[in-house]
Length: 187
Image (tube, rainbow, N blue to C red; front, side, top):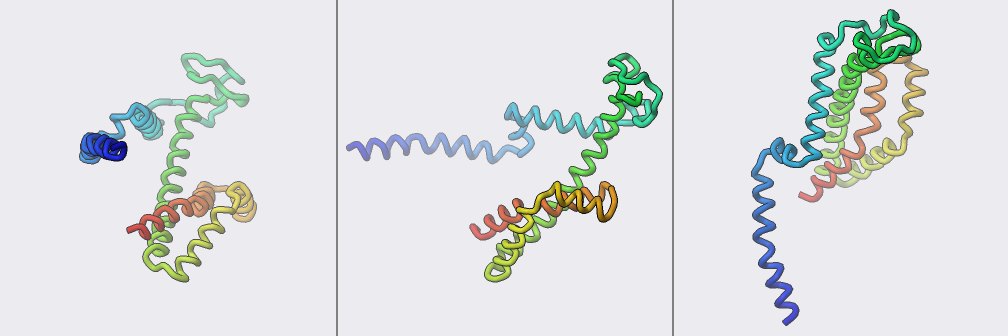
């Protein structure tokens, strides 16, 4: 009797659970993200950061490298966040720096996506020896210390955003490759 009670109780709960999952899957991804408080806050902050980066020249008229302000000045109407030890406007530096940060993030994401998807798809579809070799290469890239690689690359090739993007992109793809490979194998 106890087992039939458990079975009937779970059977009664299943349709409502399935109905809510079905409604959630039918909504667009954008609507689903906005329906959650964390998703709405995250999307708003991301949109604000992108808008700030795109509108940097309109938001501030002060050159971020100009040495015109008072040294370590407090926030004021002219310098919204104050000035640094060289008299540069901090607000202007932050706004213009957002462009570089978003550029690096977008480029690293693209490189990670291309490498991770490529390796994961090939390893998952082909299998066998090629799968083993690609997964051992993935493990090798997972254990490489990023900070050390960035220092070595800058010492050998000089500073530059392109070098940072390549190092971060080439050390970030293994997790995506493993997930894609696992999904392909599970199909």
